[in-house]
Image (cartoon, rainbow, N blue to C red; front, side, top):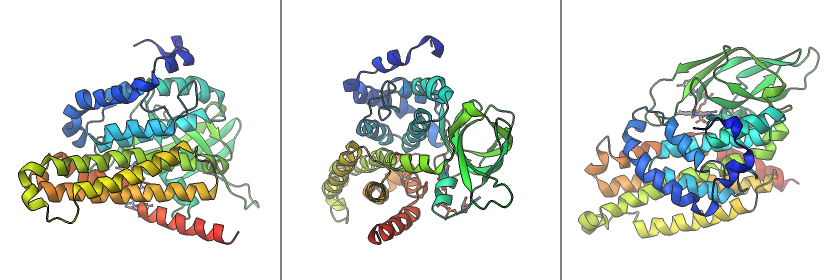
Length: 384
Ligand SMILES: Cc1cc2nc3c(=O)[nH]c(=O)nc-3n(C[C@H](O)[C@H](O)[C@H](O)COP(=O)(O)OP(=O)(O)OC[C@H]3O[C@@H](n4cnc5c(N)ncnc54)[C@H](O)[C@@H]3O)c2cc1C
């Protein structure tokens, strides 16, 4: 692989023909990913595959040129292609894709230039540690990372219980609450790039989860992690989060779409052998396909409207994301009911998808978080 510093950003972009992206991603999914799905489910983190997907442009189409095509719908379709084969890998694409947004819009020139180029090419792999801050902004929990202002930046301490797409050389976008000077009650947060290779960072193995075991998920402990200018994404963080929150959430719908399509495929796979009895089940493939098509068309249309920071736009995105979660659960369960014992075998993709679909519904923003945000924002909009 050529060292990244000999590549120009324009070369990277031009190496990714827009039209063939989905064809390339489909090939990678079928030929490279499909044989790995059992291993990934059992805990194998597919870093080489992710680099290949990055090289194909599959995780950066939503970024602005020259690093992407400013085409969120293309990123969603690429993620759906992968997620119908493996929901865990689809989730990792989201982690990487959303980290690309942080880097492209970062305050630091170093992040916007060198690090973003590495990221887009797949030389660097990085995710997002924003569940806790997103839930803190929604008043569901309190900030777990704390930053102390020091000469030249901040020193950050604290722990996060689970962050994915990590490894010894990986990184993620994170947010810490800044200690207010005494007598000052105004709190604010700083967003920064957290490099796992830094001595101040300790990655610890998580307890075994029922699924998503191959997502490189660790508990993160920070002991005096120094954030200098080069690692700064946004200070203060909240206006930045407001500007990217719709993209953050909308990008997850590509992953949900793949899980739903995977469930539909599982239902159809047994139609000829079990259709005579499966026709009595409540959820039928044709009806679910119609529901999916309607939701997917609406979601892709939303993605083409370039989501902004407005509350109205965000409510529309949250509703699309909630619908995607509900359909993921419905499709994965229907797949199992149609497949019966075949789908109950532990190594069956149907079984794996049941566990993946539940993660679609509990990862931040979890369904309960989405519904509470919709309620809060619709209340605000009504009172305006
Ligand atoms: C496999 C996996 C991967 C994840 N990847 C990421 C990621 O990449 N980035 C990221 O920011 N977040 C990640 N998360 C966190 C995720 O997005 C949610 O925040 C989490 O699933 C809990 O969400 P919830 O809203 O349902 O909260 P709830 O489950 O309702 O939790 C409420 C509170 O209890 C705590 N809690 C609940 N159970 C436990 C437990 N067993 N141990 C310790 N604390 C507990 C939670 O942290 C939270 O503070 C991951 C979680 C899992 C399981």
